[in-house]
Amino acid sequence: MARFRSAYGDSPLHLLAVLASFAIAGYAFLRIVENPSALGTLVWFGGAAVAHDLIAFPLYSALNLVAHRTIEGPEDGWEERRRVPLINHVRIPAFLSALALLMFFPLILGLDSANYEKDAGLSGDVFLTRWLGLCAALFLGSALIYAVRLRRSMRGGEDEAADPPTAHPKGT
Image 1 (tube, one colour):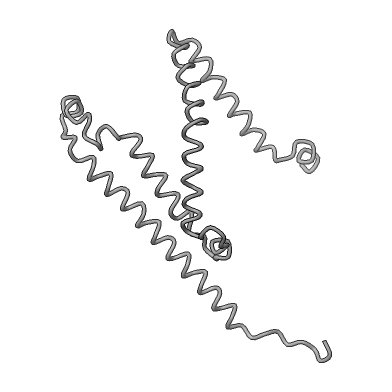
Image 2 (cartoon, rainbow, N blue to C red):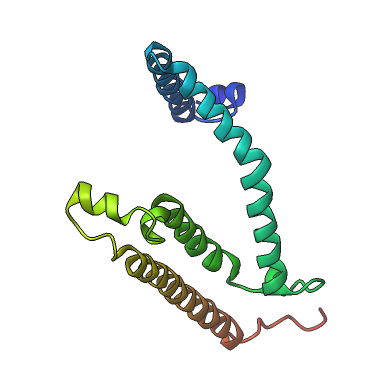
């Protein structure tokens, strides 16, 4: 096993996962190529990759930089010194809320509620309130998790401070 790890760089399970991923990707590629509209799918995929690299990546990188500077200040390393970093407790619910908005924005903004009502037979007027409720639940859950983690780290810090110092032999 050590010989394999030194030759490959990781465990056999990792190699198996990589090979399975390549097999699934190859199967998906062959299914796309067999489709009569394969060119359209490949163009869409290429456009999505370019749009991500030219629009989405700079946008969420800039938002991440703004979030870091807002939390810690421009020259302060406060976030680095914290026992429980705050940034992921803001970043994750914001990402999930934005993802839900991206997926359902026509219904959330009421742009497609007539078509939705015609197709599904249900009212499309509830999506804005449900999305806002989802956002509130995500941020509230994240805040609760942060509070628990912060309390646990403070309790750990108090326990360490309450321990008596180790006695050193005389002369040292």
